Image 1 (tube, one colour):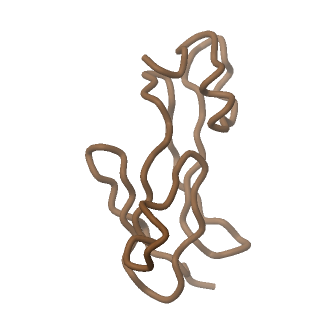
Image 2: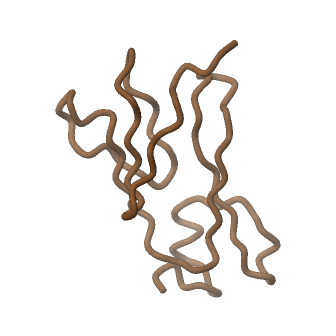
Image 3: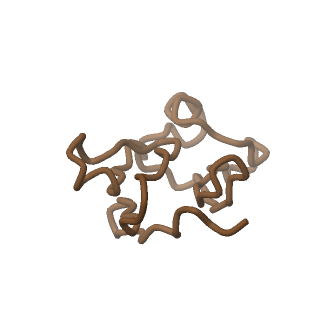
Length: 98
């Protein structure tokens, strides 16, 4: 099976812009759609706060054949665990807002 959604462009502010093709892609963890207008359904705005320890990795999901992201914590005491936005915001190491 091929990739259903192409890899998005990553903008300097963290915004993801997917190529418009077919139906809009699922919303990755830590992002929200720019708006509910159909023309903005392909633009994802980050809701993560800045953190120097957060690491983003791209993966291809099997269920939707789309490219999405997972996040890990790069702090040595955190053991690079998978992050959700709530885990990052409550982090005692990076404070999720540095």
